[in-house]
Length: 82
Image 1 (spheres, rainbow, N blue to C red):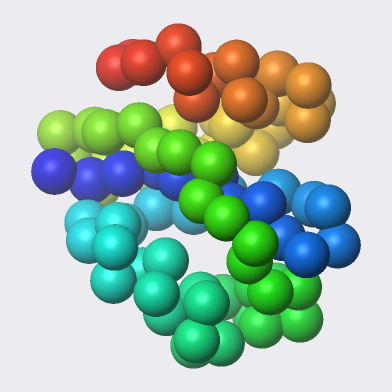
Image 2: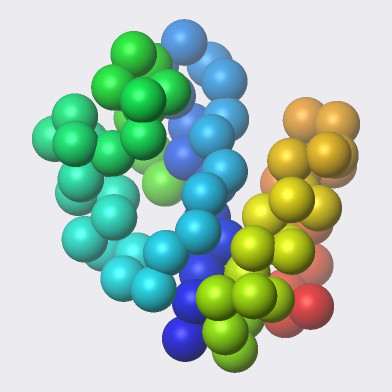
């Protein structure tokens, strides 16, 4: 199972990413070993995640959510399975 997740950063921005181990990936972001963006803008909380059957589907969904305006990102996340 793969996940597309949203993290709220200390500067108020949101970061979207994909992983197949959500707990470990979030812990890496918190520890400063995640993406370059979250090293510069540390995470405050995990807003949530949606599951996908494979990496390809998760990558497409990540691209989709990154194209959305901020106001629609949380709605996308809460909409549930694709």
